[in-house]
Image 1: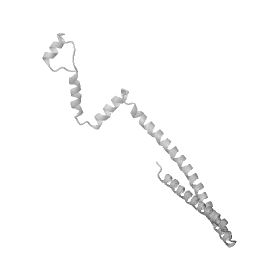
Image 2: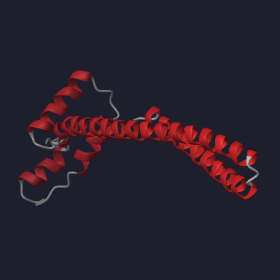
Image 3: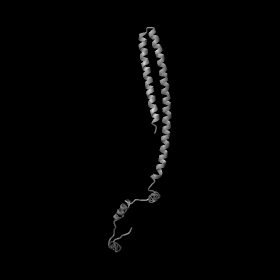
Image 4: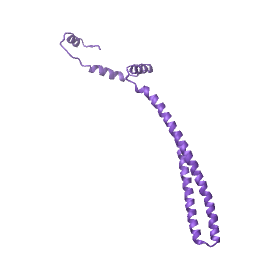
Length: 152
């Protein structure tokens, strides 16, 4: 640090002044902050801070990013695997309900032919439930498809 005021410097040397404020030091630093720094100056300052141990986070960010990327990949693989499994099951259920609907239609026709109106009503109710279950399975299958499309 350099004291440019000769009177002040003489008072310090003579012991008249025992302390010194470094406010001017910080003012100089603030003035320098307005200056445009070159890439080389920034790299040098970064390396100095790193050597002093003041920038440890910079070392951990790439490692954290790598770990997060691996974790997300595992998560995506797991969700994709499970969603595909569920999707296949829903497709299977939907197909089974469709086949069951065809059976109900045949039973309803036979019951009508035999004049069993009370049986026809129960079979039609069950047919409607079967159709609702198939549509529900198809709707949930669509949600699974959306989940698979919207992966991270």
